[in-house]
Image (tube, rainbow, N blue to C red; front, side):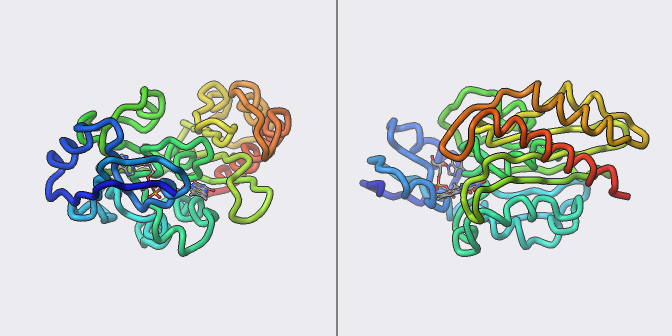
Amino acid sequence: MFTLRNVVQPDTLPEAYKILREKKSNTILGGCAWLRMGSQIIHTGVDLTKLGLNYINNCTGHIEIGAMATLRELETHQALQEYCGGVVPQAVSNIIGVQFRNVATAGASVFSRYGFSDLLTILLVLDTEIELYDGGLMGLAEFMDRPRTKDILTKIIIHKTERRAAYQALRNSASDYPVLTAAVSRLGAEWQIAVGARPTKARLALEAAKLLPGGDLTVAVMEQAAQAAATELPFGDNMRGSAEYRQAMCQVLVKRAIAEVAACK
Ligand SMILES: Cc1cc2nc3c(=O)[nH]c(=O)nc-3n(C[C@H](O)[C@H](O)[C@H](O)COP(=O)(O)OP(=O)(O)OC[C@H]3O[C@@H](n4cnc5c(N)ncnc54)[C@H](O)[C@@H]3O)c2cc1C
């Protein structure tokens, strides 16, 4: 269990950021579901609950998700259930259980860039931007490649398009961390493929996506793109699966997701 020496609830973001930067061990508190698994000693925990970041807004052209929105709120919000066939709610619905998802926050899930993240895998194929208090607005893929810094993720923005998307995850048992995650989306002739839990963080398979045409797809083309994704991305071992197993499963999950998107009207 982690230790908190002090907790503050700042009224403004500049104040929260200032306190975060004051000491190396000062830490932002989301739902604390992840933090409580560790044994960190935190000088000051910066609780964001007074900053009005617990919201999901369905705006014209985009959906805005405040950092303190919970995974359960992502799962049950009408705009997210309706957008892209509810692929975001589907992606988070297997994370532990409802009580857990009522606590874990979207901001922490994205900012922490966990390798096993279901949420990051689906957001990568959905025209997603994130806003950092200090770092500003940037595309999610760019954020994923940036070095880790002390900052505060304030919101996640999903730009609404005519994109179609599908999500696949493989777990050894329900509520366990995924062995592999895959997401595919299509906007006209442009396809995106993301694979996560490799076991490192989710990445786009850019070259494999280029093999997918704008028109109708044959099974052979789907298989070719899925195989290319499994070759393009690196895979590793952990207690849930070997690199070879992940690479083989990548072909299966990516092909299924492509087929699902291709079938969307
Ligand atoms: C047992 C367990 C199993 C899990 N299984 C899965 C799974 O299968 N799939 C999956 O996708 N996820 C899984 N997760 C991760 C989970 O979904 C959340 O991503 C995780 O719990 C972090 O959310 P939190 O609100 O609890 O963060 P916290 O524990 O509060 O914080 C985690 C980290 O994020 C930082 N942080 C929090 N909010 C912000 C912010 N706004 N800006 C900057 N930094 C911030 C904190 O300082 C801390 O370093 C699991 C977590 C646990 C504990």
